[in-house]
Amino acid sequence: MTAAVAPKRLERTRADLSEFLRLRRERLSPVEVGLPAGGRRRTPGLRREEVAALAGVGLAWYTWFEQGRNISVSAGFLDNLARVLKLDDAERRHLYLLAHQRPPSEPGRTWCTVPAQVRRLMDDLPARPAYILNLRWDVVVWNAAADRVFNFSAQAEGRRNLLWMLFADPAMRGLFVDWPAQAPAMLSTFRRDFASAGQAPDVAELVDELECVSPDFKTWWRAHDVHGSCMGLRSLRLESLGELAFEHSTLSVDESRHLRLVVYAPAPDEAKAAAFERWLMSGATTLSKPARGTRD
Image (tube, rainbow, N blue to C red; front, side, top):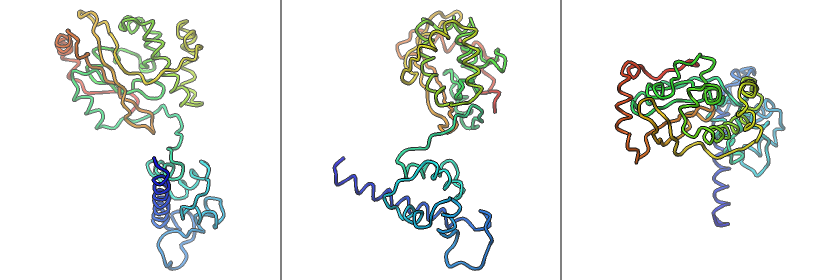
């Protein structure tokens, strides 16, 4: 980026910030923020001095900010302003991008609701095992193909967790070819989510429990390895089919709620790909069931 382009881009961003704040201020009435209705106003919405008072800053300082002047603002102020202006999650994120040129840090969330359209998307992949993980790696929704491969529905609700199954379920351990290499690699990607979860007690409890039941988990967890995104090739050992190579990808479904969709597909050169699809279809009663989960 040339020196001439950068100031122009910054100037546009400040103009967008000014317009965004003005429009959001004007859409609110005094009553909506707990102020007296008062008399007739020359302009709609809240006045700048009212926003400044509610956000706990001086009028001159807030005016400069709304005008897009080059002043520094804290995350605390932006959160306060988002509260005063009654911004939703998308608007709050937009405010951060305009003011800080980066999104806000989101609190770790492990409870979630999966949108119905995402469930339908998964059901439209009958030959592609697919499931959704939350920040704790609970398997919150899965399609029939994933259930056939990973047997999620057979797990007790509190144990339908990919990390728990990987380290405490012998059947899952047997499913992964080269488990001693795959398990620590998957664990290292979970460590990033553990950091994102902050002080979420259910995530810390999961780690504590796994350290008690799995020596391998304890050893690898304390190595503090952190790898990149968990995607690529992975070999699975399936009933009556033997070993098959799969490509697996992880896609963000809802970034603010830390939901990710994991999809498996036979590798392009996998000779048993057709046999795998027939094997899936042999579980017709399972495949007739829609994508499902328990934490909706």
